[in-house]
Length: 367
Image 1 (tube, rainbow, N blue to C red):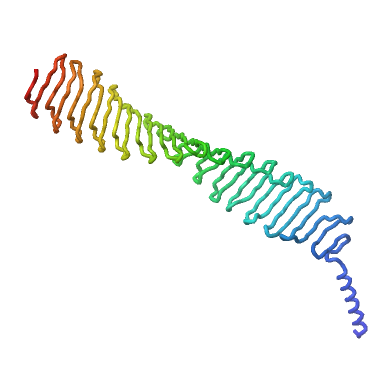
Image 2 (cartoon, rainbow, N blue to C red; image 1 turned 90 degrees about the horizontal axis):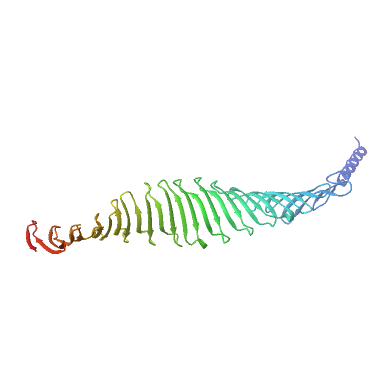
């Protein structure tokens, strides 16, 4: 090949190269390439798709033929997003990654206000529904441990009801007032017993109704959530009423069983100091006890309806007895060993006195 042929061949290659450079990057009629964006148009010049950067990233918009909707694919500082939008503003769908890196799917109605949000928080999925005013009204969530819950909100977005389970699967339903304070809670105790709890205004004072294996019970608590009154049925079915102080110590108990119906009063050391009861034979008794729960004074009504009073020492020995019988009334005095030493009384209308020694031998008698 001579020099003239080589020059001619190079000129042809150069012409083809110039022609290639003069063509758009994306060839074909009606298609253009610009430095800041790429547009896809139809034969009439209508934009069907557009790829361009924006201040937060890069986006691709795909328009419908009738220009009523658009599909947006965007990747920027908020992560990747895919959005379906109606141009009349009557609805949209957004699939993306939120700023915390969690996936979410958002359904919106007119005005692009969220209607439903499906997403995740703290590594757990969630579902939220909104009313047409854009206010949240219902949530369905799983926490990080997989525990489910359903929340229902009022018209101003405040939580009014939560249906959930504890981490061990026990169900729980809580109702709230407009201030967000719990007012009613229906739950299951760890032992499997159902419980209904009621709170006063601001969470002050509670009432709890439970049903255990032994029977039902009702407790009343003060504003510090300390139980102060408990009404229950014992395991054998006997009712009992307890009163507590602010240190949750029992101070008064009222109850009954097959043998005794009575009242007990406790000191701060949980020792019985006063007891009043009626036994199975319908005999009432009142006892006053010392710090060691030893009876020191006892009042009772005998079967014949005659009253009696007795005083006792710290060892339980009787020191004095006052009482009556069908024939009269009397006073009996005993020594420190509990042995009767003197009897003073009225028998059949006549006064009488008897003194005896420790061996029960009469020392004096009148008349």
